[in-house]
Amino acid sequence: MALVNQPAVPIGEPIAPITGSGPSDQAKIALGERLFDDVRLSHDDVVACSGCHRLDLSGDDGRARSTAADGEPLDFNAPTVFNAALDFRLNWRGNFRTVEEQNEAALLDGRLMNTNWEELLPKLRSDPDYSQRFVTVYGAAPSRTDVLDALANFQRSLITPNARFDRYLKGERDAITADEEHGYQLFKAYGCIACHQGANVGGNLFQKFGIFLDPFASQKTLTEADLGRITVTGTESDRHVFRVPSLRNVAVTAPYFHDGRTASLADAVKIMARSQLGRELDQRDADLIVKFLGTLTGEYRGRPLTSAADRLQQ
Image (cartoon, rainbow, N blue to C red):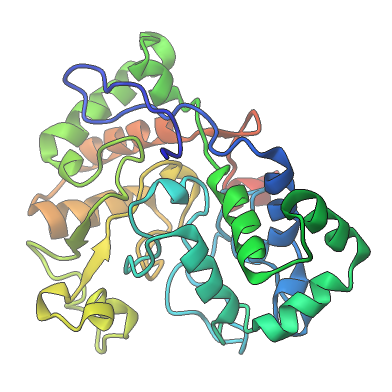
C-alpha cells in the first residue's frame, strides 16, 4: 500500500510534489503521538523520541550530534523525522527498511532509549489511560507489536505538503521567485538532481560521499560513522557510502551531513559540488541554489516548519 498518493510528475520535471497526509487512522496516530512524546519509552524515564526529533522545530534538534544516554555525543547527526517514511531506507547508513524496525532498534539501543520490552510494557500496562486506549484501538493490552504499529502510524503521518515548490510544480508559477526558479535550473544543470529527485527530493538511493574529492582528507582520524555502510555490509565498495538524504525542509534542518559538519546551507552546497560533482561553485550560484532549496520547506498541521535557529531568534 502506498504511503501517500502522488500525482504524476509534471512533464520534464524530475521532482514530484507531495500530496496527501499518510495514514488515516486517527486513533492510531493519536496514540502513536502520545508514545512519541513519552519519556517512559526510555530506561529510567529520561528521554522521549521527541527529545531528538522536535516537531515544534523541524523534526530534529538543531545540534550537530544529539546527546546519548551516557551523556556523550551520538555518532550521527539526528535526521529529521518529517517525511522520513518516504525514504526507501532509514538512517544515514540505510540499515533499516521499515519504520517499525528502526523504532525498535532505537528503543533497545543502549545509547538511545536504552530500554527493553520487559521494562517498557509493564509501565504502559500500569497506566489506565494507555490500557484503555490500546484496548479500544487494538483490542488488547499494550504489546510490542501494537506499540511499534502505533508509533509507525504516527511517524508515517509526519508528511509536509504544500511547499512553495510543490505549488509551483502544480501550476502556480508565481509561488516561487525568479531567483528561486533560476536556482532550480542551476540545481539541475550542475547535476544535483541526479541524486536528489522524486517526491522526497532524495532519500531513494545510496551514494558514496566523496566521488571527486575526499571530504575526509583533512581529518586526522576517521570515526566509525565516517565509514558509512561498510560497517553494515562489510563490503569494501560501501566505504563512505550513505543513504542520500532528502532535501525536503533542508533550509530549516541545519546542521548538515552525517556528522553535522556545517550549519551553513551555502557551505553544504559548495561541499557537495566539490565532492560529488567535481565542480567549484561561485558564491552567486551557490546562493541561488540555496534560494531554490528554501522553497522546499513544507507545512505540518497547516504551518511551515521552523528551524532551531529561527526559534531562538523569536
